[in-house]
Length: 115
Length: 110
Image 1 (cartoon, each protein chain N blue to C red):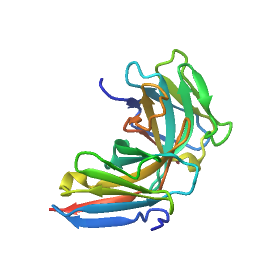
Image 2: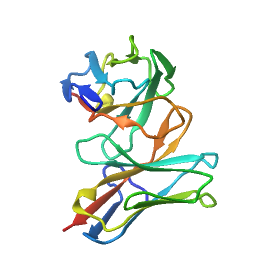
Image 3: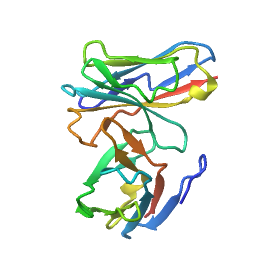
């Protein structure tokens, strides 16, 4: 595909369950970002990967949140012991490199609802 | 203006009008700003950017103005079309992150 692909598009889970959200970035993009967007708000930064390593994870709200990118392409955001406050749209974005550019290419997001 | 919860600032215009969307930023050290457009159910889409060594930059039908003295950005859309209806965010770029504002909803009536 030409764009950033995120799966699932919608996920409904129960409080306390474990959730994985997947992101397929644009081919060849070395930088990958996760953001979280609550209703009526702008996206909030979670974590940034350059290649396989997490270059900046300062936005992860607590240790229930973890993300990996083992081969420098696909990334998975993992949320343990979900809480109702985790309900949001989780957006993934990629870019060719940091390049000091603000042009990120976003996917359509994974909407997480925690009941 | 400020938004609280679901109540985004909203700008309603008629098709063909010019639109101006405003944004205040807080970090006087910020030197790179970006405007994004987000349509319902989609991810944000890059529109235009500006660095702090400029006060104006033009794209196709869009112009961004930067006033560093009062820490204010604006996005001007010429001849607004129904397809411009969306939420518009300004963002400040850090080394590895974008810090987004709360957004303004633009509603364009035919």
